[in-house]
Image 1 (cartoon, helix red, strand yellow):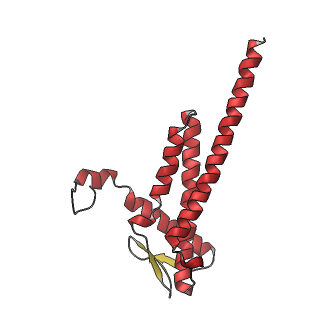
Image 2: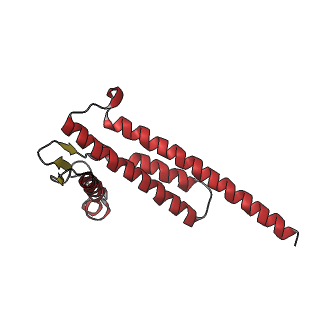
Image 3: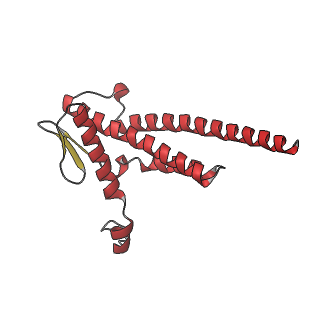
Length: 164
């Protein structure tokens, strides 16, 4: 509804379209990460990141990683816990996935520039999905462990208060 073709609604485009800002933040974060590594990177338009004298990457809609982030947020939302705890886990997990994506974008640009090949012939999207879902599985394990720990502590508190 925010794209000019199809069912376009200007309100959605103007006030609810977070994609351009999210894409820009990924590109800018990747640029700063590359600069920290000593590479001269710059944003070349709203969807391109380039190395001076080198190649560029194009960050299209399918590269944003919002699918895995949405999965993570939905998982936490569907579980038990206080809103405060859920919000902390949602933000922390989304931040971890964001960082994985920034690293992926940066490495893809370096790989293009240096003409490196990705291992096993898999593309950067496949490697991002592998890294992102491994991170999600680890975060699910930690979340479930913290839930069990909190449940055990609450059970002990309830039994202790019954005996007083």
